[in-house]
Each structure stands twice: as C-alpha cells, then as structure tokens.
Length: 291
Image (cartoon, rainbow, N blue to C red):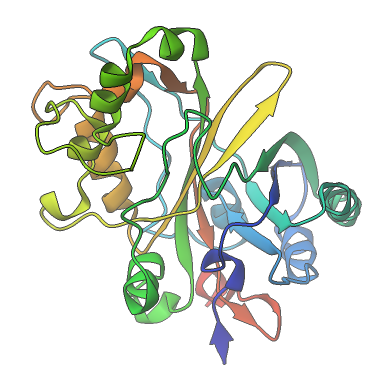
C-alpha cells in the first residue's frame, strides 16, 4: 500500500533546509535507483525528483516537464532545474544541518550537492515584507485533492514548483503603506483583501478560482536569508503543474498585458519542477518510472 509523503501536508516548521543535487557524471541508472531507495522518508523530509532524474532512472513522466523560462514585459523568469530536491523540516536548525550532512554522504556516490538554502518561519507564517503568505490555502480534503495526483498510476504522489524569490527591501520600504497594500491586494494591518485593489495586485493576479480550470495550489513557502540577500522560498504542491503555470503566466502579463505588482520589489532567481513520489514501506515508490 502506498502513502503520501506526510511532510507535504504538515504545518510549516520553525526551520527548513532546501538541498539541490546534480547527478555525478557517468553514474549508472541502477545506482541512482538504489541510492534513492535507501532514503528513509520521515515526516521531516520531503523528496522531489527533477525531469533529468526521472528520465535517467526510468521513463519520462508526461506530467513532469521542464520549468519554463520567460523574458517578457521587462520580467525575467529563470529556469534552474536540478536532478533532486530535498526539503528538510524541523524545530532545531543544528539538527537540520546534521541531517543534511548525513544525507549528502549517503547520496555521494551518485549525487553532488549543488545548492543549499536555509529557510525559517517568520512570526505566524509571514513573508519578510510582513504580509501573510498562503492566506487562501486549501485545507482538509481540499488540500489533499489540490496537492496529490489524480492519475491512478501516481496516487499519493505530488508535483511541486519551487522558486527562490529575492526581495529588494530598499525599494519596498520606500513605498508608502498604501502602495504596499495595493501591490499585495491586502491590508498589512488586518490581512483583509482590498475591494478596490488595482488589477496588478498580487491577490487579483493569482485568484485561484478565477482560472478555467481553477488553479489551486498548496503553498508551503518560507522566508530565507543569507549573505547574498533574503526573500521568499516559494514552494507549491499541486496535482497538476498547469495550475502553477497558469498563475505564473498571468503574473508576467502573458494573459492581458498586466504584470503582477510583486515584480516592483521582488524577483525569482531560481525555478524548478519536481515529482514527489508516494511511499511504500517508508521508501520512495518509484514503480511508476520502472513499470
């Protein structure tokens, strides 16, 4: 019997560590498969496979395509795919570091750590700008229907879109409170949606029920910060990547020429799609790739 990776539905942790891996050149598919099968998936760990990895160890998943790259309306959306994405979650930052080091050593024969980013929970779950993130997140059964595949072959598995956004705080703080609220589409003071928000407001650009079909996502985003800057690690699980792509295309103005006001003070510096397999006896179930 297969089950979903429980960390997908779990509440946000106090701390996160995001690890991105590339495949060691020349590594055989059999070894990669063995290394993935040895990962013990606990509630504090979520693992996603990129398109290059799924195709290497089995067959391409039609639902998992390369992350799109755009350069339009003065906005650049980068595509920075990795073979393997790992989200480590917990309350102790030191423990996350040690757990990550153990995983890096465990995978070393076939995977090389390419990038690591630390995330953290701010207040009760807010972006560093102070605005609440994921206000319209589905809950309960709706969250399950949103996050997990409806394909009978992929039940219990999920797809995730990951983007690291870097904020320009000097620009954001130079904006008036009204300009900030209008950019988000909500009041900072009480998180209430603005009835008269401009069409460029983020809330209007990404209203999930306004798409056909509806484009619901289960967001699990958290702030990040390092020597190079800070911002939001956007993480959204979905049964279909079309939901994320529809929102992204509207944000950059492909639908009606109106760009999301978020781009006035923040921009993505990475982007990748990953498949998060279901579990069988606590290990990744890779049978959809191998038959």
